[in-house]
Image (cartoon, rainbow, N blue to C red; front, side, top):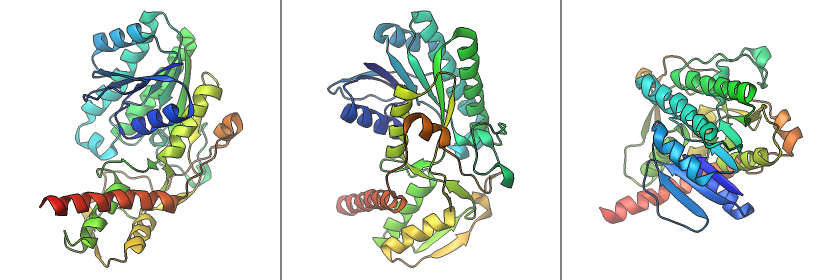
Length: 318
């Protein structure tokens, strides 16, 4: 089996590749904007998803049996600062990929990675969120992902593409960059623990509740969807458990024993923030048998360990 993964050098992309290499005999084809070293069973192509000609060449030459489209600008805060970049990367990039598949005359299974952000702010009666909920994106990233959802549906209907959409809720784990909330907390707490910064944190909205799943469980769900998902269908990937951002911070702090001042900073609040969001993964579970396996606290511990290692490296190189 020949699997093309766009964004394979990214956070979730690397975990997806590792999962498939460990659990299948697939040969992987990675598209990334960075330069990557060759490795067994992995072919790399350095390309930007908005470059239609290059993407067409990659798809035509590799002729994948399956595609996992993960390349995206996925940071909500960044999307507020530069909406057009987010729209271009996410919408134009996916369109180029689909057009390349059509031009190559192939019929791979295509898994589009969307986001729970497309649902927007749910009403209490909407919880837990199911795939049938009306899309109400309330930030530029969410709007771009909603467009990707609709594009996938359109090409399923108009061209009979074997396309599936996964809507993951918040996922986190080893390798995630500090630009996201949990690794950012872990890094700053580890630096306080190591004496590298003052014991205080400036914080945004800590009352928001999110549905967190370990990225390693999430990519296991993607692999099962490649095998067992139904064409034209949409699947939530989530734990079904809401946890507040304050709970996340408190749990990390308890793992270290540091004492810190928490300062609310209005500048860190988003223009609009969803108060509570958690999902229902019944459809995914019934189709594939998937369930999350990694404990929330274990994932936090793994992230904190990485942050501590970066602190050690920083101290040793000083």
